[in-house]
Image 1 (cartoon, protein in one colour):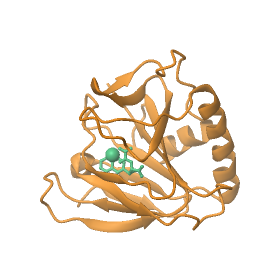
Image 2: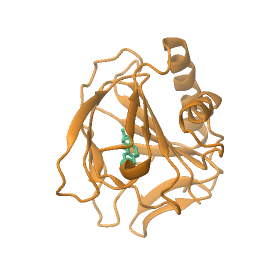
Image 3: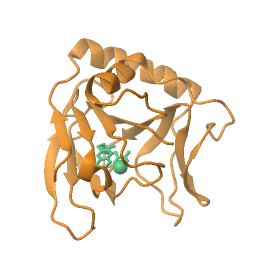
Length: 195
Ligand code: MD3
Ligand code: FE
């Protein structure tokens, strides 16, 4: 699939550690949620957001909201994440949302498309931290063939062009494969222009 680019080790250890501590502040202000799909299924990944808007899901649907369900504003996007966007996105507009996904042992994310944004010409930039995750990406139909790649701590993935509407997911993580998170687990940040 054209438009998938993985930059290995884009963040050095010092920046991974700093970003992780910035994310602890994000989660203190806007705690991780255990999301439920509109169909009533519990997701195994925990989520929160930073930025002007955050992505939420519940019985009312998938959408972007200006506030955390607690009523607080989403915290600002950490500077290191913004630096990654400005370096690798190839666009000169900053993202509206930085979704933070937390994968504990056994967590996964099924194959899906990201289609809650207003304009799919904007790229998505993702940062992986902590344990390795097996990322799978296919085509713009669910039936299209897929390929898989392990994303490691410090890797950045840029999804643009045809890949922006590709089906993708995380099949599994290698729990405990990284020492970055003291108790294990994987964090993925995805930055997006929403509208
Ligand atoms: C390919 N997150 O939050 S990041 C998501 O690792 C999501 O947590 C995964 O899928 C994770 O929606 C994958 C890489 C990624 C992000 C967005 C994409 C790949 C993408 C959008 C289109 C195609
Ligand atoms: Fe996605």
